[in-house]
Amino acid sequence: MVILSILALSLNWPTQVFGSFNPNLASDTQGLLWIVALYAAIHIPLDYIGGYWLPCHFSRQCLMFSFFASQYIRGLLVQAVFLIASGLVVLQIGRLGGRPAVLALLLFVMLVMIEGQDWLARFVAGLRISGSEWINGRKVVMVSGMDAGFAGGLVGLPGRERHIVPSLWQRVLPKGVVDLEIERRTAALKTGSRLRGLALAILFNLSGFYVSSLLPSAGVTTLSELFTTALGFTLWSFIGLLVLPTLSRRGVFELDQFAKSNGMSDTNFALTVRELDQLQDDEPTRTIGVETIFHPVPNVESRITRFRTGLHSTGAWNAARYALYLSWPCLGFLNRAVHCNSGRPELWVMLPVD
Image (cartoon, rainbow, N blue to C red; front, top):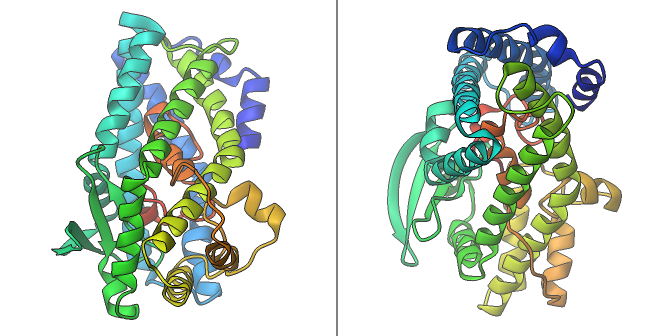
């Protein structure tokens, strides 16, 4: 996706293809349909490999192909509608108020996405609420799905947060692991790390969209300009995949140390992170280079070692993956092109957290 974006920008492809389109609703809709269709066509073979073939080949999880296909098509169509609608609204607002109005619009949409993240996740992937309960004074909503990598998380605007937990965890994890993980996520609120992660993700996306709209032939008033902006924003998102994971990892270490200071034992912590990792990457160790660039969640052994030493960190919890989710209205093309959610609709809206 990065290479294709660079080629398209270098060849000034958006202007060549869409430069003659009249700035009206019909032309904008037609052009956005073509753009989103091309985006889907490029992704479909990669999503098949990442979401179906590789998990089956390595015995991670292997759903019936008909189920995978139906769930994937559902997610594809929902996201396509979202992207097209976002593009249309951005163009209309851009013609009325220019870049400042568009940035205000994007901020509003991102805030709505934060508040309704659980709702959008259910709509995209067919996740179902299986129940709710109060654990340690916090309302916890149990959500059922088919992807073992779905880890739930914290959703909602600051002050309105809700814990989302996979119902699978209660069935397969040792007793107490879910409670310990909820304590850690509560720590994300108490330390302010989640708020820092959200703020950083929003600021990163807004600044990236603004900078991208200043590229030659870019803007927010015509389809060719918006497509150029989207391609530039895709490159900006790639930069985010390189720099934001470091702050996300520090956020994980911050919560780990908060849990330790509040009485979590070394044994319980090691049990928790090992069990959860087996449901997700199942990659307890990694080389430093690989982890530094692309992994916002530290490997298991690094976390256990850091937990025992008690070294304090301050970070921005989940900033890298919040930025990917919140890039939807900016028309970024990398939001489901990362190793953890390629071809897995249940993880497009709620990407895996620690």
